[in-house]
Amino acid sequence: MLGWLKRKSPDKQQSEVEQGAAYGVSAGRYVGEFFILMEQDSKTITFLSLPDMKIREITVAQFKTGVDNKIIEFQEVLPDDIKQVCIEQYDTAKKSNN
Image (tube, rainbow, N blue to C red; front, side, top):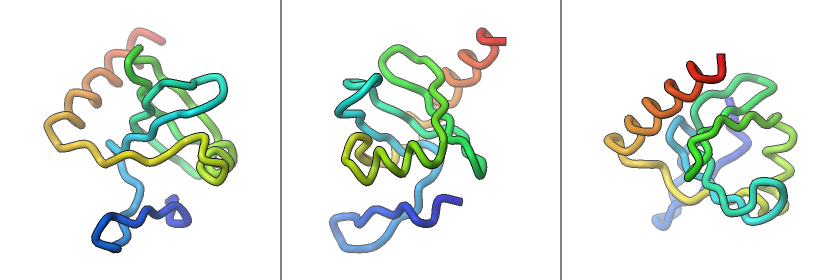
């Protein structure tokens, strides 16, 4: 879905954005937080924000602007075991918001 957003890995291969991708936020309202990508559709991207375990939704346009201006920077795709913990935390946070 976000094919326009690719990151070159150290070995020069491209990797697609996927659930469990971690982004550092270096400016703005969420400075100092890490965003873990949880869900996305054509208009919105939903993240689990660390360390507070809050759900953050931003539009695709805001995300693209943040990436282009180095406000949101890709860090890594989390290992499967850590990604699973984040998914469980995200599900818990979703339930408590309803």
